[in-house]
Length: 196
Image 1 (cartoon, helix red, strand yellow):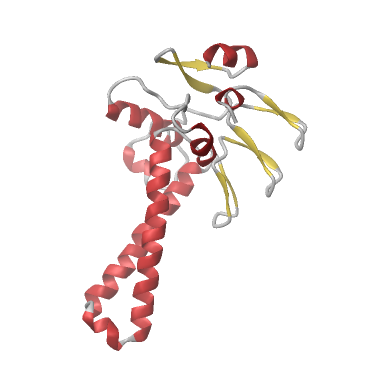
Image 2: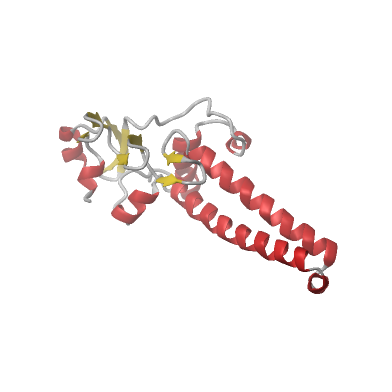
């Protein structure tokens, strides 16, 4: 898929409605999802603009929880003491394996949020991501991209499963990189052709 197909309105033949830019139809949920990331069997629905924050929070706390179990078991028995208790050894290995895999998934989604991409877009767009904010220094850009998902709330609210008070992006308007400066466009065919 080209960049152009991501930045304009398209028609969904399954839902029989116009879908905004960055919207994809999920064949499992049978619905169009704004800024769809993926269909998640853990959450039981699609991860998109309205619940990507909650998915990230889920990964964060699942990673910390499984890591805590691993550390607690090792602190209780020690690394060499695990050989005498098979149950604790299996629990430690399982919790460590889960913490590594969930931690890797958490790192990937942290990267995607920092650069304002979804999993689908990261595969298709590679280095041509027109959605990330490129103005300012590195720290300012990352914070601006994160605020697109998490809102302009204090950072500690980002860690809690709370609805953002000031959500900056609802999935219908698209912020694009236009000749080196970030600008807003409604994503119509005409403005998308000019922006790309």
